[in-house]
Image 1 (cartoon, rainbow over the protein chains, first blue to last red):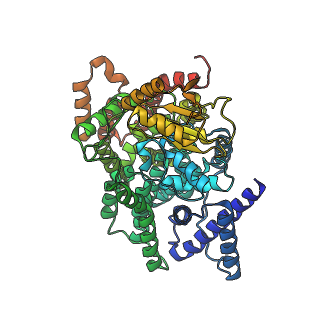
Image 2: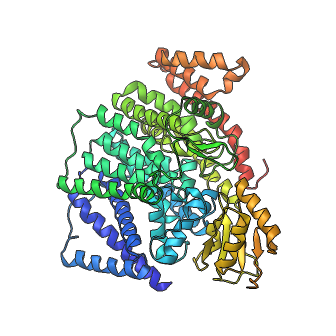
Image 3: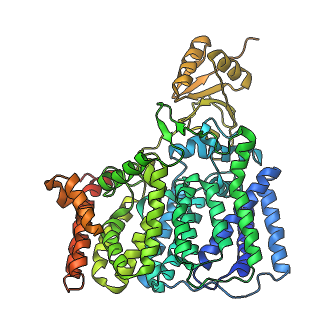
Amino acid sequence: MILGILWMLIANAAVLGVAVWLLRRFRTGSEVDWPLLLVLRIALISAIVLLSGLAGTLTAVFLGIAGGATLALLLATRALRPGPGLPRLEAGPVALAISAIVALRLAWQVAAFSPHVGDTLTYHLPKVAEWVRAGGFTRELGADVRASFPAGFELIEAWWVVFLRHDALIELAGIEFLLLAFAAVHSLGRTLGLAPRTAFWAALLFVLVPSFHLQATSCLNDGAVSALLLTALAFAAARAPLPLVAGVIGLGIGVKPTFAYALPGVAFLAFAVRRAPALSIPAPRGAVLFAIAATLAGASWYLRNLLWYGNPIHPVGLAGIHGPSGSLSQQVGPSLSSFTYNIQCLLDVRLLDSHRPYGPTADAIAGWGPVAVACGLPSLILALREDRLWRLVASAFGISLLSVFALVQLDLWFMRFVLFFPAILALSIARLGGSWKGVVPLCVAGLLLQFAGTFVSWEWRARLVVRPPPELAPREPVACFGDNLGFSYQLYGRDYSRPVLFIRADSAAELVDRVRRSGARILFASPEWRRDKLILVEALRLAPFRDLDRGFFLIPQDPR
Amino acid sequence: MSAGLLLLWRLWVLLPGELWRDPLAILAAYWLFLRFAGHTKAWRPVTLLVMTGLLALYAWGQVPQTLSLLEMKP
């Protein structure tokens, strides 16, 4: 463990060092440099984990030694000698004190939470566990068909677990993107003409938006999508070189396709501000290389799916993807009915967050919080009346919001795909508060409610924990037959010490045969699909598996 | 124009008794107010009134949820 911590510190220092070195080649001299530094770090980590995963060198020792060598090279070549720094972040004492409190609470949340949201346990994280166990990418991704979705965010999660071979710090992946969103909103605020301290407030108000804030420690990837989209919007608004915007877009598409759904807003903004003075950078050709590398990293998942399954967006077909109940769970292409229902649902049901406590999935709520809704919306109207650039940027946010609404199915969780939108509300309230202190008491009241409601999420309170039975020894392999609600990630253990053998079967006889041949003594079965449930029931009739409760079964030794 | 259309839409789809607690109707009315009286001294008290009303509506729904999350009975 101590050695793991050492490798982790060395590798992180090296990545930060290379990001700073790259920043000197891409620096704009404006506030855009802050999100640029963070996005370069994320791109580097993505590339390192991708290449290590492909080469089978995804281990603490290899990454630590490579990091040490890189650090030595940076120091020997004096690549990090003092040079032009980042623009100074200015904040008043109150904003700094609140930031410190929020940072302390985030540290507690990282330490206290373990992965707990159903989607992450079922199809995001089992592949990370397989990678860490194997020291590289594996063909096995988990039982859920959605495991083959793009995994750009999982690359960052793998980075934060591979050194300790434990998921204690896995939520730091989300924190990286929370910091990126902070820097992006700050940059956007400065471009919109906010004073440095006011822009700091805007960024702080955004990262306290309840659903976005809780996403950061949930292992879900929608917060990462929002952070990257805000970065693309900040770059476009400031007229950063196009390759930098393209690089962010490449990374975003590799995290989740919903990122691409929101891109019309970025395209609109880039076009609308095309006559404004552009930012220049010292190494424009290097930025093109960054854009190519980031796009390749993002596209790699679609390429892999094309090679493995013959469909870049597997398991989604032209008709979308259906859930266990048979209803459409994810659509493909725009739909007027989705567009109308989603808008109606936001305005009539979700906006006031009255149906659920806050949570990262924005289940039955919008999760934008009282500051954005009560203070931000009227402030936005004021800003729209007074400033053309605000109208253009707000239009870009609106176009992105509506574009996503046209492309996603109305369900309990659709609002998590538009977590970027409250950023324009946070910017608006900061703008108003910067010139008129009369709104501050209302914001304070709203912030107190948000802060109280985001210590834990309702998903954490209602979490399901798979508890292996006493018959299953530590590190002993377990067979797993499950699909949508397998929660198979928990079977590995937080230190990834237990092998999980996924069993796929088209009939009861096949299931019994494969379970017996797996060599495992214990089977965990929690199918959700009707077909798999019937197979399990029949298999239990065929074979004398002993029920150990909570989905676990003891497999009798094969008499052969 | 947009604000007027928004308000008309909400008048069309909502019952009269629901209008006072519809955030969109409140925002559309506020937008109309700013259009016609935004240059007067009244904009600040009206803005505060609108924000306070929206905050109260929001808190009415969310505070019980937050209290239940924190295992504190309202």
